[in-house]
Image 1 (cartoon, one colour):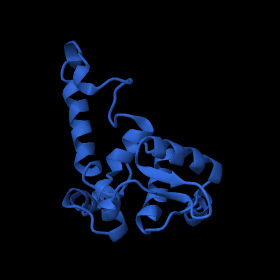
Image 2 (cartoon, one colour; image 1 turned 90 degrees about the vertical axis):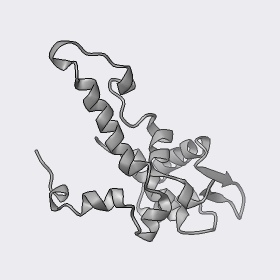
Image 3 (cartoon, one colour; image 1 turned 45 degrees about the vertical axis):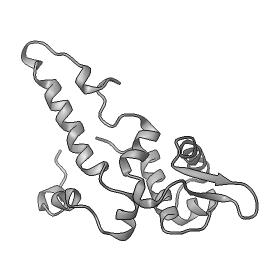
Length: 151
């Protein structure tokens, strides 16, 4: 699974918002995280339409989280930005049917989706900001093999 820049940038900006109670301008969010301002502006618009952030114009304006950081999971953000997390050719894995030697491939795709959910649905913005990650994450990061890429 590739995490696109759009998702990475969105989560980084949201973590900045999660660490404050103040409204923060798009420009300040971009500066804080070293992100391209125009691209971040478009991302924040998507997040506003998706109900993740609210925005206010004016001198006291900017962006803030629409809910408490503990109520926004990484999965919520990814779904707003890109739809279902584990689609296959744009379809939900449980709707696929394969024949012959590939008959059980659907089971693999459903398992992939379930394993993503174990982490992404149970990690909130608050968990990341506080560094208090759930066991479902630390179980994986505690395995030294998880830190090595395979080609």
